[in-house]
Image (cartoon, rainbow, N blue to C red; front, side, top):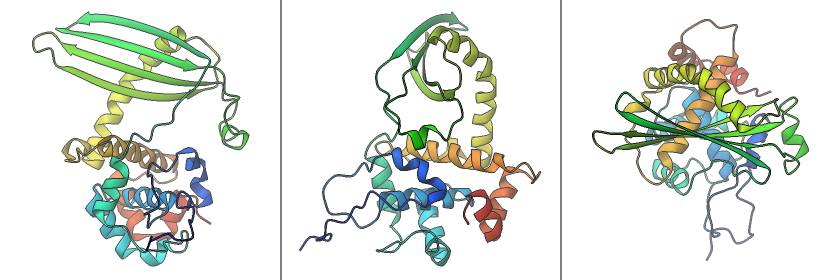
Length: 256
């Protein structure tokens, strides 16, 4: 007998505070699902906000915080196992796809024994976006995709990095190429924060797209922690406080 005989919509389950993530489609196929995808995403973000870094940690957090979680999500089949979290986030890349109306700019530089190719693609036409989602970003006019390929000349090793940006500017990709270069030093600093706070470089998750999707979750959580300007404590202390103080956790997640 199928586990979902009533064909329930298991793609839902997002609390209103993070409803903007509803644009991310459920990556799973078939009807044999036990957990709403939106709820899985909410559990993962909440756990990481409170200091959890891997899928086993996320499962432990949800087991211990199940009463708090059920205030905001239904969890009809309880807490997913760590392997379930891993399987869901490994299925495919959850990055948003962009559409028509692009401008493109590519620059190639050779220095310090390496060749760096930086490609910037900008979507200037956003009429395909849902008005409710688009309205969450004031004066949004451009979505920017930045891809960097670095080739080491002594080993032919190639490293690929991808970044995404939102902008109120309506300018060609060549202009964004210059603007973004100025901010890469800040991105390097962000990587240092992610490594020291979330131990990103120590993560041993390699299955499918799980590593990349976990990286996206870390950046979501990092932004949530930085929004709170009233708390001047370090990021690790903020995560620990979110674990122990429900009022503070609810505030960071914009929960009622």
